Amino acid sequence: MSSSPKPSRLAAALTFLARLSFAATIILIPFRWRTVLLARPNPPVYADYTDFLLFAADIAMLCALLFWGASLLAAPRKIKFGPAHIWIPLLGLTLVGWLSLTDSWDAPLTVYHALRFSFLFLYFLFIVNEIHAPAWVVTPVALQLLIQSIVAIGQSVLQHDLGLQNIGEYNLDPLWRGVSVLESGGTRFLRAYGLSDHPNILGGCLAFGLLILLAHQLSAASPQSPVSRPQFSNSLILFCSTLIFILASLALLLTFSRSAWVAFAAGSLLIAGAQAVRRNLSALKRVGVLMILCLLASSPFIVRDLPYLSARFGAGDSFTENRVEHGSIIERAFLFDAGNKIFVDHALTGVGLGVSPLAMKNAYPQSPVNYQPPHFTILAVAEETGIFGAMFYFILLSIPIIVFFTQRHILKNRPVAATCFALLIAISTIGLFDYYTWLLAPGRLWQWTAWALWAVSYKYYELA
Image (cartoon, rainbow, N blue to C red; front, top):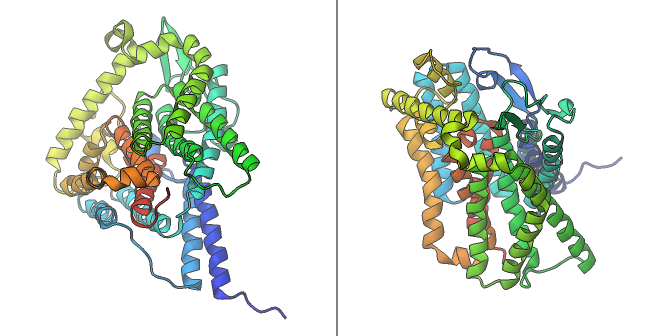
């Protein structure tokens, strides 16, 4: 009769399963596939803002936490929290989310979002304790980019969906109301959705993943980087990584998400700048090669879509003459002003975590725009959780910047930390123009993942 496995082996197996679940979480972040746990319609507010939803990435994250918890029971060990400048304000933000329940305009909805925050804090701790090898991040990110890019490029070429509704794809037609499109000369042009909920969300996910893949490319090109695999295997991995990078760059272009473009540019400059400080000429040459390859791959699409690209940058007075572009500006201005007024009236505890779209409806029943949070993350945080939530969120955004630029050895000697900081900067850049990194599941997962990866790279290991 066989004996039970030793606790250490059992714990190792459970930890491995937790890491596999984490990898699945990363792959599934952009997917809009979900199940509705409880429908709570409140028209004309978008149903996703009020329903209780369980996304594919949520399921994978919960599996990671369950396996990790079981491994801790099998082999008890001390839990690391990471650097204090991250975990303390992150815990504070989680607690403030629960505190906002005291004056919430929709208490059940706030409980739902506060529970999500609590699980995200545990997810943060899991990454800090168990994800210390870049491969556990780079590989699932590459798979995420490959899947989303193929679908996004196909949608843009065909100008309709690919029939993948079983895995979450929208029914897409540029002539339908509610579908995100661009206009030029009276022609409606479909923006790429991939398998996500909106082109802006897909654009953000692609930008974040591209930064990680860019760092991997530069690390592989570095002569100082240790190569533990055979040369052929290493070359094959680099080739596949390059191909995925080119596809994802093209898909990012086809989302027409300006905030994602700016976020990727900001993060890329930081990553390349870190290599320049290290005088890594081979890595900088690799940047040039990637830029040329991406430009060559994108050229036919740039020529095809030039009128729409020009409109995104204000050509031909598009910000005043183009109905889509002008409407976007009017919407964002109204939401910012309305969100600021609601915050001022509820500055202490906010209107409740996750409740800002409903608060907007209640405060402005005759609104000329769709009910949603302001497209400025820290204002959305303040509106929902009050001044203390905004304070904790501001600390989480600002302290890593102070740490990074005051501890110069990070920039010069720790490229993984520089990459994680670039990811934080990219996500913060998105937050200047959109709210999904605060309210929506894909954005939250990327934001909490970035905070955790920064904590790991800053506190626990170095990789030359």
